[in-house]
Image (cartoon, rainbow, N blue to C red; front, top):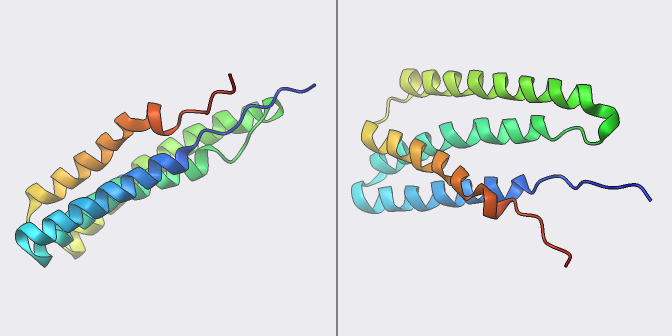
Length: 128
């Protein structure tokens, strides 16, 4: 009987990040109006989109016969995440400068901190 290792549930982590961004955007709209909500949304998306790209790229292969592809995929995913983050920061600050940089960077950091929840969000159900 062949062993089967299931893929991590990265969708839960990405969903938690989207919920975090939407809640922060709502709070930003309530606190400071649309300019603040836009800054919060942009900051959250600059954090979320590279993580989504990383998850999509990283978990394309599965199984021992794809070991080389898995390792290559990890390096390409990390490089792509870094490049996408730099490109998104550049794009935001050139095309739509945030009206409130504190909220922009705050949303970016809080969205990244959602990774701290990953041990619970990506947990596999126990079959005991």
